[in-house]
Amino acid sequence: MHGRTRLKPRKYRAYTRKDIDAIPQLDRVAPRLRTAMKAVSAVLPFRVNDYVLDELIRWEDVPDDPIFRLTFPQPEMLEPGDLRRMVDLVREEAPPAALKAEARAIQDRLNPHPAGQMTLNVPRLDGAPVAGMQHKYRETVLFFPSQGQTCHAYCTYCFRWAQFVGIESLKFASREAQTLVRYLRAHREVRSVLITGGDPLIMKTATLRRYVEPLLTEPGLDHIASIRLGSKAPAYWPYRFVTDPDADDLLQLFEEVRAAGKHLALMTHISHPREIQTRVAAEGLRRAAGAGAVVRCQAPLMRGINDDPDVWADLWSRQVRLGAVPYYLFVARDTGPKGYFEVPLARAHDIFREACRRVSGLARTVRGPSMSALPGKVVVDGVADVAGERVFVLKLLQGRVPGWVGRPFFAAFDPEAAWLDHLRPAFGEAEFFYEAELRAIENGRPEPWRRSGRARGGDRRGGRRTLPVVVGLADPAGAIDRPTWMTV
Image (cartoon, rainbow, N blue to C red; front, side):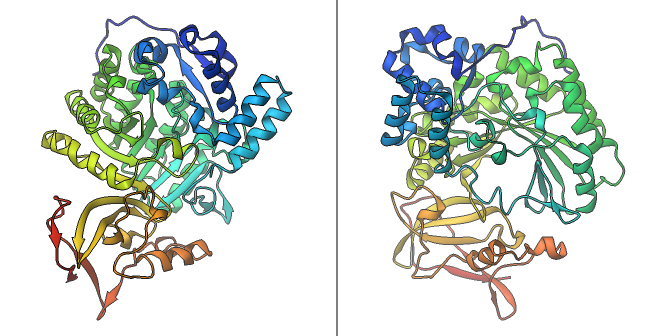
């Protein structure tokens, strides 16, 4: 059971763009910066709450405080010309329509839906696209309940920023739990459902229950082994698990998922150790785990917020101490204000590797640095000298085609590259091994598992698949004469 708590309840209060001048802590911020915040927040979403303001930000360190950068819009998040135009409109008190039109033009240039989210990932049922769902990987379906398409506070790096800027055509959202059930019955290859957003834990438990309960009780869903809830609540509003009026109801729902024989994973984004240093954050994680949730922590590596191995080592160690599982270190996605936050892949790998050296094996469950790109989750496994060439050693942890998963491949080393699209194949190869099949998928050919439910893919030599196997990659300075090919 989840037990009782002695912490005092707190009433949630949110601040948005229209409240910037009403946030008392911003009185110490220069008026010029506040004006820039208003300009940037007309383009990218802004929402914060009083818990973040009072407990997480060290205001004496502003504007360099990492939680401040994580939650408040920064001028450099827009290109200089775009920022000047937006600041001029704010200063001129331009009509809302003019401000919105300029903001929309900028938003369109910020790649609002990367990695095929609006094209390749939307599933179909009875020949029609299904609103509010994504099915990129064979075993996992993402579901976006319409009532959960906001958050307790917004991360400035959020790759789903387009959900929150008021453009209906860019939103994923569904009110139809039965549509999800029908889709899952028709797709028995699915093993896991991720309820995401936004943040599904912004919803009252009674509303969340309407989406979760059918996955436990409806016939024909015995193939669903796990339910995941994607949430930032443990960091931005841990009272959701502790003293909110329906906190105990939420934990009861967690217990029901476990009693139904399903794995319940709370997929939470923790970007900085300070987010889980408060007493209420620790209590929230304790109660969630006590109710049967496995808390898995993930976050992207972001310049100016957590681009330091000491920060990650501290973060992962604290997560383990609180009973959570370090899960992913992501690379900043190629959307929104990526240029402000991005860290080159070479440095990301160095930070990840150095942080791993400083923690015990229990914290080395984390995987990364991982790019959630068009072909799948591509991890930078190492840097090595292979056949006389300096290379990145890459691998797909998850892929559109299951046969791509786990296969090492190589990219020419580039110290400035910050995303998969910046890389070129090593050894004079024309393209990466998956690219021809990916082009066919982009041109309308379904992935193999959509056609037959069976995984296919991979190069063949003599009728069997050949994989390059490279050993000894833990030391980036190590040299390997040539790739070794293993036939399986």
